[in-house]
Length: 179
Image 1 (cartoon, rainbow, N blue to C red):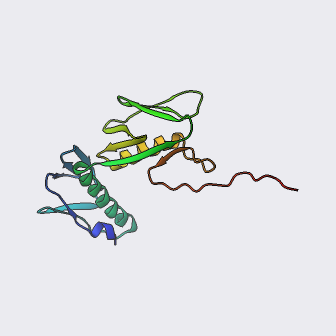
Image 2 (cartoon, helix red, strand yellow):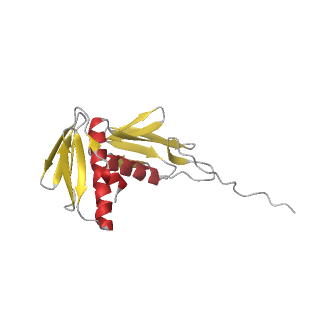
Image 3 (tube, rainbow, N blue to C red):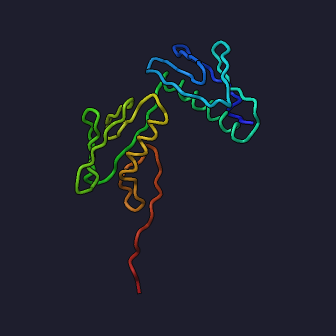
C-alpha cells in the first residue's frame, strides 16, 4: 500500500483539471501542463478533490500509484505557484550573466561557457544568485542540476556552484610536514 497514493489531492481555486482517456491536463494562472498516467491507476474527481485509485496490489503498481499522485500534485502546485531553484557561485574570478535565453558563465576555464535556457523556464540573477523558475518541478530541478554540474563546489576552498542554503563540508588540505 502506498501511503502517498492514498492521500487525495485538493484542487485550489483558479486551477482547472481535465481528465481524458489516460491523460490529465492541469491549467492555472502560470500556464498548463499535461501528464499521461499509467494504465494501472485511475483518477476520480469528487468536487475539488482528486483521488488516484488502483486495484492491483503488486510492488510495481504500488510504486506507480504513489508516483502518479506525486506528479499530479506537483503539476497543480506548479501551475498555481510555480517552482524555483537558487544557485550561488563562489570563487575569485567566477562570473555569471543572463542575456535573453542564454546564461553566460566564466568558471575559470580557458573559454566562456554559454548555456541555453530550456523552453518553459526562466533564469535571472538577483544579488549574485542565479534564480531558475518555471511551472514544471522536474524541469526546474534538472536544469539547476545541470548548471551546478558545470562547476560543482569543491571541498577544499569551497569554490563553485552551490544551492542557496547548502552546507558544504570542508576538508583540511595538506599539513606541513614536521620532523
